[in-house]
Length: 345
Ligand SMILES: *Cc1c(COP(=O)(O)O)cnc(C)c1O
Image (tube, rainbow, N blue to C red; front, top):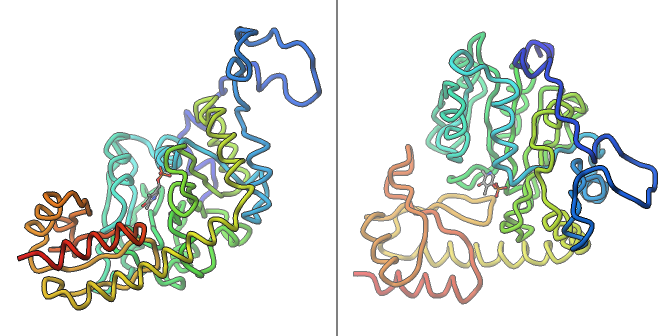
């Protein structure tokens, strides 16, 4: 791996970050806070929240088995996707490499940050080859985007290939594990000590059922997290989100229950799809959704909208022609979808 100084934009490497009132005063108990121009009334919403979310990181650290100093928390994964561009990729100069098809935000953030985006097509089984990704890199490639289980394809990517990228690429490798809770595959967050160039993304938006509160996580070396903390908005995770996340973390068994039900429902739905005359193929899934190749995705999508049932039409995505992406819902919601599809003519 190149040194972190080489990988970081020079203006970010030398950045003197904003020092907030809550940053400068950290730790010891105090009784009177007259340092942040807050209103003394309307507790608890009058006070700025903890800029480093230490209590939340402490609890997450226990659940995830990762030291708090290796955790960054952001306003959804979206913030953790945008930040590496702002920290590492020089606009108009650097580029990134990513698997294709995958989650759309990697490219949107590349475009916003004026960083060239180099997609590398997966094979017909939606698997990647490390050599193909590495061949797409040059001296200006700062990071490689990998998503596993991948969206919209739903499958885990081959672990050995990801490891080869981690070993052979001299820049940063970001593995988005938004759907990790739905698969028994070992999370890459446990491999942080082995790979200083690894950044793992997870979120509370999917299995944890907290998409509304916007809380995403990045796991990485302390050196990378320190750079993120310099560049992020000072109070990027608001108090309500921190409180609600702490509430949710008290009951991880609830999440296990949800995951179990959703995986059962996924299995039932895929069986029902398999025998639909309008379904040509269902793809293997390791997530809470699956991809189905239909006879005419656009027409079926429009029909479902008329029925009040919304799925995701992925027909325009490479390798996903005529594919619909189906999220697993409640038993009743899934039954409604299947019933509507059986009525389709
Ligand atoms: C849903 C999803 C996310 C989650 O984004 P949040 O901003 O945390 O809600 C991240 N990555 C992928 C691949 C996703 O599908």
